[in-house]
Image (cartoon, rainbow, N blue to C red; front, side, top):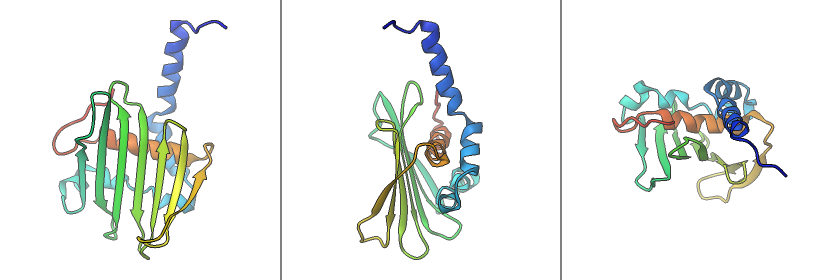
Length: 170
């Protein structure tokens, strides 16, 4: 077995970056099935207008970030006043997303949650009937748009200026 050349490694990295482009993320978000579309509809909460309204949307870099990774969280209220939380952890040097979590409160009292992990490259969905119930959990297949859409939301959060401090993602 031969080792890949530096050019092959660089090419693989470039393909990985291209695969996670903003355009691709947007396509994934637009391609979500109806079941997930409303849950993932949080981009407007990352807008400068929403973030300027501290009663509606608050973005914060987290203090448990390390020299190796960056962590950020968005706590917001959607147009119906229901809670939304988006969390992302990414590698500081490369900007590669390592984990994204999205939890949304539902009008009837339940919650929907999604967790994507780089370690196993899976997207788990969780549904709570109410805030005190045990969640029903299932895996969303990798070939669907949801995993990429959730990573895309995480990348958007990383690129968002929180608490007045711009964060640069390389």
